[in-house]
Image (tube, rainbow over all chains, first blue to last red; front, top):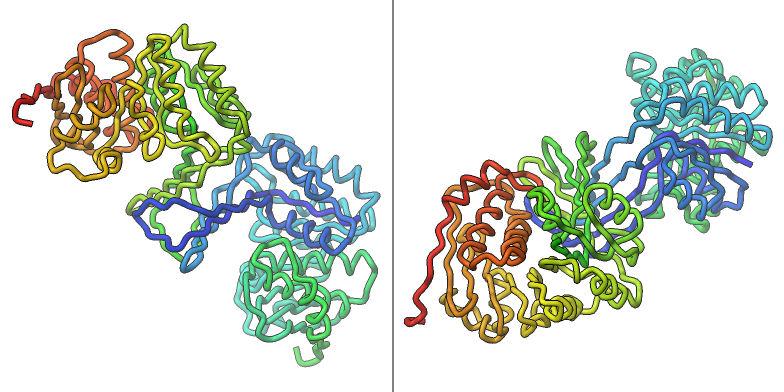
Length: 302
Length: 302
């Protein structure tokens, strides 16, 4: 069973309108609502793939109860409310993201206790997304150490301070290029050099996520360049979460890195073609698996 | 005690941003949330004035429980969720109104039973705003007849079909000029002729609400033109609800129509100067009461 951890859940709301005009009143005919947050999206993709998963995190009572009706989930009621992320789809897409709600004191300890209880059944663990206000910056790093102590592979999809705090934990880090540059303190001209520098500093695998350019990974002393199929377009939100689901599933199965990375890239691309984050297109996934290219990069020149 | 009825409640959400740009992602720093709906706003104003009130309506469990912590309220849990009305305040104000949620079958009967239980304690009753999907169009009219049978004055602030169904109930109707024109089937050149035609068709008082131009009322065989103080500016949302609160309070007290109308117009103007609907500025209200003009219009020329 793969544990996914969400420390800043969201209710993803979509309004569909013919047109959005600043300064006017709009009656919204079509509203759709979905429980989200990046870790929830990882769990949704695993669940869709038939992979046993359990979504864990911090939320309020309503969110936890409602999510548990959709997939195996345990959210501690540590927030007084859950933020909304509003996407207004009209001629173009306009997003309004509410700030997260304050976390109750001691929530980090209670979540670690819950994870300690569950880690024995876990085959992999992910921590994805931002932290609700009041969550200590190093909580994802502490979760990664708990997983490492139990021999469970961990994937951390974090940004900013939480990412910085996770360097050295040995977990798989999945920064994008901007996040990697901030962490290194400079914008490296060569992404291969960046991923190697980061992985050496970290002492563990780094999977650089590069959007349409795919993945660039350093693991077990080798760099792999992974290119998704060309011409895939759609909604990139949730692609990283589908890729994280692929990494977690591959590590849980003990697959080889080239195979894990191929699967992660195919799942990421298969999420782009679906309008909703947290879902993949199974047919696209099947064909993308054969279309992803994985190449080992010779490090002698780096 | 004044009963206020809300048949399509809303959670009023305000986002404050430096700028709203269509097609972009915005992190919203400031979110405020308030339980609303027009009848709730009427009750809030009455409550603020120290007038005993009880807000009644259809909502879900969360809404009813939360509102009852703020003011006396009984909302039947007949909706599966409560719509949000989002106001984005940036360089200008952009509004996005979600549609109401479906009402459970039989909700109208259960609400009438609740009102039948409470009407004996009531001194006046208001029904304000739109109807949630599934609420029969004639429910406000049936509520007005229940009030009339108990000798309780009723004020109906409705639009479209619900307003049309309420003609003939004898309750006070408070359409705006557009609503009156739709009801009459023509846009009368003279608002005095319109209010007289409507009141004669209705067989009861009509208070035409005209925004900055104030109120034009036909009651007890006389037409009254009520002018608010000049130069009042601010947020007109909620002004009609404050005026309805004034009408309800005046009718409950058995005041004379010129006095009732003066008070309603002063309350409406005192709501405009407050940014939040459902609230008045008490100091502005005091001075506006002396500044409102109420004139009887000679009907011989009409």
